[in-house]
Each structure stands twice: as C-alpha cells, then as structure tokens.
Length: 184
Image (cartoon, rainbow, N blue to C red; front, side, top):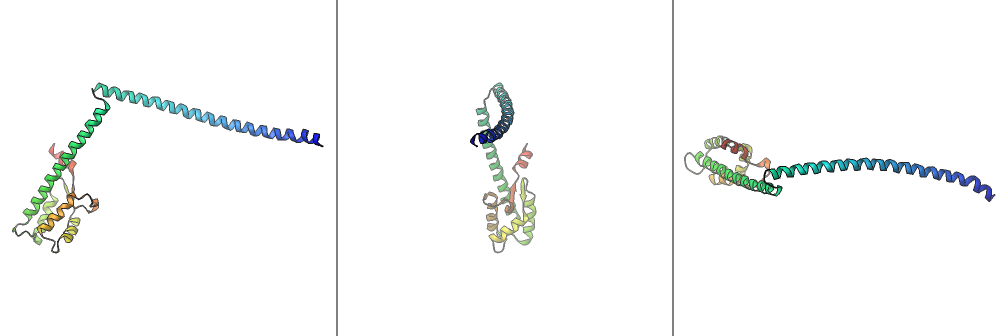
C-alpha cells in the first residue's frame, strides 16, 4: 500500500506544486519587467533634470551671478517692496485722516449727519483704497454711542493696520499695486 501511495499521489502533488511555482515565477517576471520599465523612466527623468540644472547653471554663470546671488537679490527686492508698501500705507492713512478732519466742516470735532455722507463719499474716492461703507457703519456704532465723534472715527481708522481683523470685516483695503502702477 505504501508503494502504491507513493507512486500515485506523490507525482500529482509534485506536479501541482511545480505549476504553482511556475505561476509565481511568471508573476515575478512580469513585476520585474514593470519595475525595469519604471526604472528606465526614472533614469530618463533624472537625465532630463540634470540637463535642465546644467542649463540653469550656465545661464546663471553667463549673467555673472550664481543662484545664491539671485536669491539674495530677490530677498532684497522683497524688503524694498515691503518698505514701499509701508510708505504707501502711511500716505493713504494720512489721506484718510485729512478726509476725516475736512469732513468736519463746522470744526466742532463731531461729524454731523450731513457731514457723514460727505465723509463716506470722500473716503470712497481715495486712490488706492477700497472702502466698505457697511463695515464702516458697524465699526462706528461700536466705537461711539452717537457714531459721529472724530475720536471714534480715528479709532475706526486703526482698522487699517489691525492684522487680526478678518478680511471680510476690513473697512479699508489698500490696493498697493494699483497705487504703484499710477506712480509709474
């Protein structure tokens, strides 16, 4: 019985195991082929990137500057741009304050109802500034019980420099780029 079992069953199991091993070898071969293709694509991309890097370095050297110098110039330009923006914001704030004081036509340091309309109209016409009349009214109601005190108006003007005020609540939005374009 042992001999009969060994000659009939063992070859069948061996044949099945051999087929499973062949299937696994074929699957691994396919994966290997896919990996080889991906590796070739990566090598091509690496070569292309090296060419681009070389060309950028050539351009940089041709201009007599290296990448570090260009980065430093960009930083310096940003700093100068920030200073220009701050100067423009200060000038806009001066304009706003002038408009506020000129709206007080009777000089009583209160903005009367007829002066409020003139003030809003003038604030809307300041170059380089978006004025939100709705946000202005809300802020004025918070700042002053009668809503027309010049001191309260000046407090409201601080909104221009308060970074904690959400953009949708801003009374004034300085359009620096627009002002800079007009200066050119």
